[in-house]
Length: 193
Image 1 (spheres, rainbow, N blue to C red):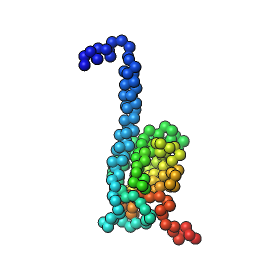
Image 2: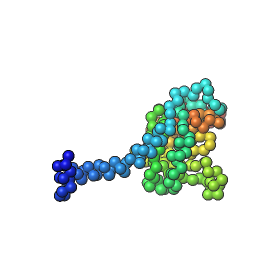
Image 3: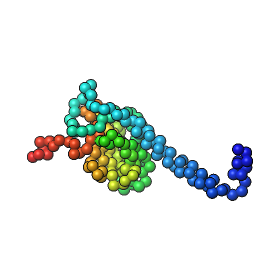
């Protein structure tokens, strides 16, 4: 105890002290990422199936989907402080979000708020925000998402399985969401003609 403390305070730092300091610095730098990622993952709760008590009308009915309940108030709180920029600013993105994928897994993305509306229009509709991001582990995997009063909507591109989507399970229900692959959508009459 005391002997070890006196060794550390007297003389130059040993190799292990420098290594420990580097480790602690790395831990300190990564902790906001771990906290934000853990916070966003905690907002999604697996729902199993759509359920018979589903509120609202379903318009998007994929063959296969993973179902989740989203804490939209918590998500809005997480996104409110996002840095604003353009897709060219993505290398400076420091905010992280963890999103559910159609297979039930989660994926971490770095993101920025990327407004589409002119400032005056944005001021009139403060609850409509748009964001862009890239996967933390693969910058070729891109993300576009928004959070509106109707719910959370996302499109993930660049995945080997194809495009993935997250959106409300039914119109009028901003809590129940589904994650699905584009290839699990049945063609519509417009697609066939």
